[in-house]
Length: 390
Image 1: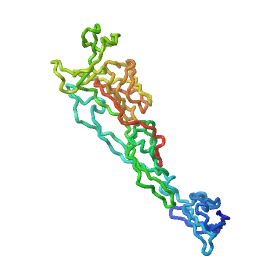
Image 2: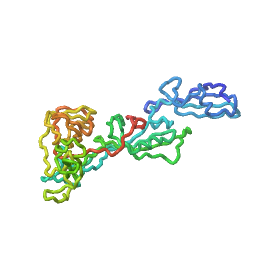
Image 3: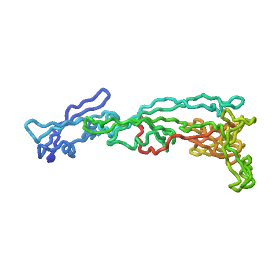
Image 4: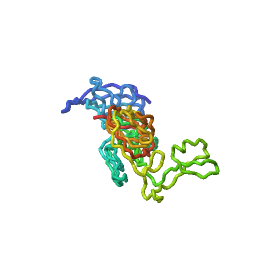
């Protein structure tokens, strides 16, 4: 059961549309060696024009429609009609759903996040350094609704739901740094869809939320308990509270310990409200805020090292919030905390810079904050993302 021969009968029905697009029709005579030759065998023959194949006279005209009819009174003779068009192909015009462009509508939005400091990094505290509670700020985000077709169920995509991108991704021609895109709400219909050409596919939809500031959260380093550093002169002697420096000076492990104790006021009463902690986990009863910006702040893209002209001190600045203008995604400010102070001019931050900056004024208030990332990072290299620019 095969095709014996294919012969072009005529070229007719040429037409030019109002926008200059051309349409032409060619008819082919097909002779079979058996009346029960399958349609797939017929369409696979080398002389039969394929879907999206070019017109013999105009390479810009592609085959957009085909029809196959049997000649009356002949079981082994068929007529194939092929329609060609120069109309530009768009994603929605492609009748093969598995070759369609990934689609993604986009809208702007915002999310409310707790506010602990203003735009300059100054903590929202009163004159006694009590934190103003209940304030929030808006973070600008983008919401992208993605649609992609699959030949089989993409179980891996469901495994990636509720994750962040571990490396940079590009959506609609714009590249977003690692940790700024959140995949969620993956949906699949009850059964596959079938195209008019009989192609079975699964239309999958999911959402991508883009937050250029990242998804890490910053919380004030406050609490009702503090760490207490103790030493003793012998294994039978009582424990005595000491400073962190005195604790570090003791080399024998069983002669020093760290305990956690409820913070007490100067009247030896339990503190009623959480208090700011220093980087040793001890209560800071009177918080001192720096009002002077550090000068010549510089960072390299994808690095978490900040350099300034001088003045950094571990006891004062470790754990503090720092704001670096222009070092965040797309030139926005970078918000981070100081993890380590290497010298008076260099420190390590909790977040890497997205943009290289030099000569910036860097403000480091005295209050300490903690940086956390609650969402999982994952490899998005197999995630279909819309890049069909108009």
